[in-house]
Length: 238
Image 1 (tube, one colour):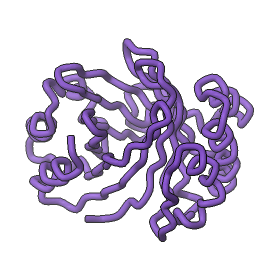
Image 2 (spheres, rainbow, N blue to C red; image 1 turned 90 degrees about the vertical axis):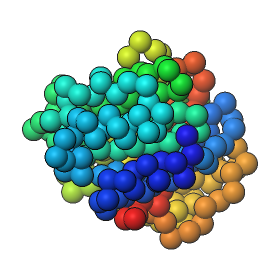
Image 3 (cartoon, rainbow, N blue to C red; image 1 turned 180 degrees about the horizontal axis):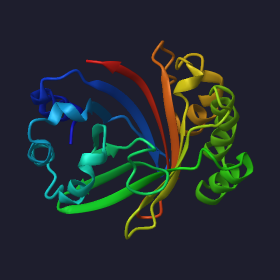
Image 4 (cartoon, rainbow, N blue to C red; image 1 turned 120 degrees about the vertical axis):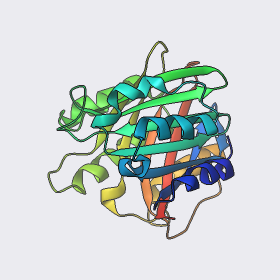
């Protein structure tokens, strides 16, 4: 699915949206045809389940019903394009999460294949436990080093000293990753250059030296077992 298609379909909601870009490196190859749109759940009213299903269908999803039982508890909805993969996320507050520490539940589809993913907070766990999870899921090298470098920056930028870190798993596949939220650090992509430069160098990425904000960083292995890393940037209202 293209970014243009994502923006066109979500524009039918006629509400203010947040759009964020990302670059994903998988098997050593960067891909920039990725984007995410966020809306308040109230944008789906007066018939949220029907509207969610219609938007997902228009984005190529064959069946979004896995999200239906949890839509009432969500407060925000995300739609994303990742080359030939489409995505829809529900975001929960700690008070409404259907499972302990669950922050997001998502469906991701490629053609007729739809998988469910869970994004579980491990912010409350000791830093050493977070580091061990990174080492378990991210192969040694520049990506793993970057994750370890970002962890203390994220931790020191939050009021409570807890880095916002998610453990991501996918039902019925080996996909697993770690996501570190860097938004509280309030770094622009230019300011984050020293952190990201090893990644740029290792994978031939042109440095994005702009005033766009650095959002978050994710890394792990995909459902086929291939290592990947993704960094998100430039979230803005549209």
